[in-house]
Length: 98
Image (cartoon, rainbow, N blue to C red; front, side):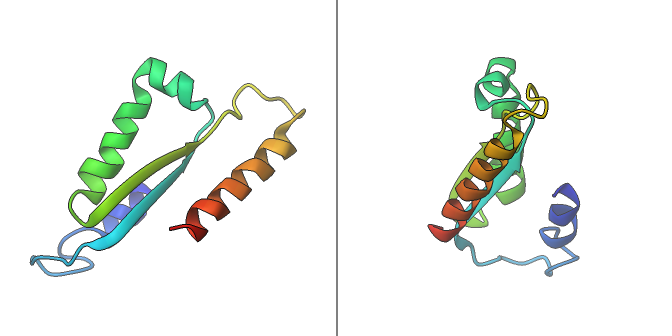
C-alpha cells in the first residue's frame, strides 16, 4: 500500500503541483496480525492512523476513516477461516457503506 501512495498520491507523478479537489471520504483498511487493542497498548495504532490519515491522506478528503482488521497473529490453523470470513465481510460492508 505504501508503494501505491508513493506513486499515486505523490505530487509530480499523478498530478502537477496544484490544489487538488478533495474527495468526500477516504477509507483506509489495514490488515494486521495483532488485535487493535494490542496495537493501541503499544502505541502502534496511533502511529499507523497518523501516518495514513494525517501524512498520506492529509487534506485530500473531507472525511477520513482508518480501520484495522486484525487478530490473526495468535491463531494457528484453528479459527483462521472464520476470522478471514469476518474480515472479508467487514471490508465489504465498509466499502459498500462508503
